[in-house]
Image (cartoon, rainbow, N blue to C red; front, side, top):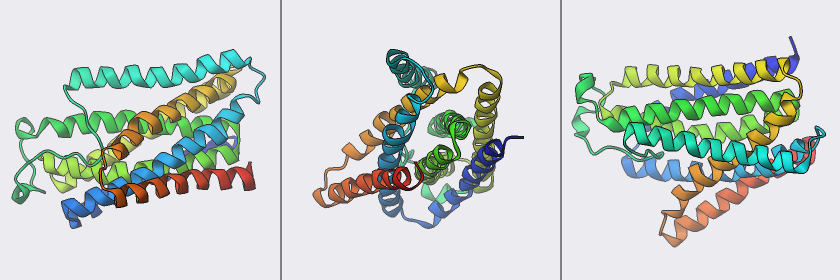
Length: 266
């Protein structure tokens, strides 16, 4: 088996273990949790944008495809994500962002409620997180098919993106009525979907001619969507000048991490 395939599967497994980080959110106040999540989102936003622009985009031109073909593939990845998210929102009846939580009785947190009594936000969060994990796994698989360096850069960007997702998503599940134990198991199962995404992208990449030439710009479009639509709008809600300045600094720091990876390993 190709060594990069093993690296891809190992990277996705490590990302999946981040599901356990959500437990830490139970020891944090709501204010501290929100501040932590938003700081991590800022770091992830810079890293994901940097990975798309500095790594995936240049690699898209290394496979002999016409520039307009690459442009259409990037647009396809971006608009495909948009259509999928709109479809999820239509059938789930709502929108979920990291750190958004249903207003429930805090004394009931950690106790398993009957399924009929679980807040709908919990199910919406679960669906959104599962789709996000599938996308992350596919991105990691595609990147390792191109090169080890691109795979590592994408893994780092995904990890920085996944940490705030786990903090926020776990809190939503528990406050929606799931027990702590079930929330952990659900998060682990959801993380397992990332492995499915990775396996599919690896299979397609290894068995379809010119697949990497197509998949790399599509991955670039997906990464651009995840950062521009999934993360940056959350940061724009901040009105505090001091907090905004910190977030801007963290966005630049995330971008700088990707730039340094490009300089030393590109």
